[in-house]
Image (tube, rainbow, N blue to C red; front, side, top):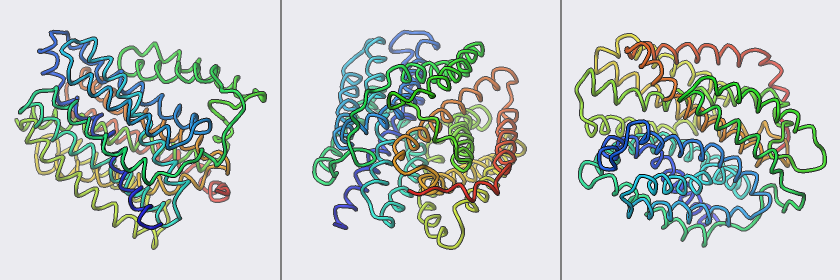
Length: 441
């Protein structure tokens, strides 16, 4: 039994690592892709934008579908789609088919993190579950770091097509899924009530308008606000299984962790976006040189996840999140001041942000299932992953806008200092209430 659990943990970690790497790989190759495909900069940016939107929407969609289809079936389907999209991307030389390949990739890859977390929570004993959630959190930071290095190296040596070919290797995880992944539905039983297609459309409008509003046109955020009201009105229905069950937001502890996690992911991916630009423009580093730095930092942060897991026997998850927020704040303060002019301090700041991200992600991954009502595990984790992906899209989008407006890196780093302070202040409001809001799992 232990051997099966360990094999399942390894399989889930490989799946999560592949998904995270794939979201970073192509950021390095956009310039080469633009020139070879003979398209404009705005057109090639859709390689990243379309992937981000589908990943965010798909994460909660798969979480919901896990009540209608078996987790094992959905993960196998997701891996199959991901591999199929990767093959299309490898063999094509046309822009439209590259976009289609990325859409198919993201349609499959959006299952990876959300369903892996649900599987870890549902099929593993407490000790193994915490280990799996710790490793998944570590893989998020590890994948972002090595993804940049591998993306730069593969693009330089073999061209951007090799990135698609590399992602085909995720097919090996099917062996583990077939052999050690248990059969079963999220929350333990199959849902027979109708699927909420109207709620799905409202959520799709929310995600698309938010991501495009931040990236392209702020006026689209009006649609984001409108979609929230639509979801709230739709959420009062009692005759179907809601696509977004708003009752999970009744618990302050859950909401507090969502806000913290959004800022945590925004800051982390914001640094992954900003530091390579800083290294190139100010310190004149190549993409591969920057990738080496990020790779070493991400490996150290990944190893730190094991220390974090052991520390949870001494301090509480909430305390660890607080300490992580302070370290992250210090990291951004270093980057905003001396880091923009001195390489050593820039690396120190990035290391602080990476380390804090790993610590906080591990702590939140373990804490958040305790704030979700019994029977709503899949819904709560789906929303949690949705918020994470939206944070990941918000970080680089707002960073690029600030750079376009002010042309100085310190302003972008200062923005994250401000939102970190605000999120910590907000999380302290009513914190005494949250201690009584942990519900039965």
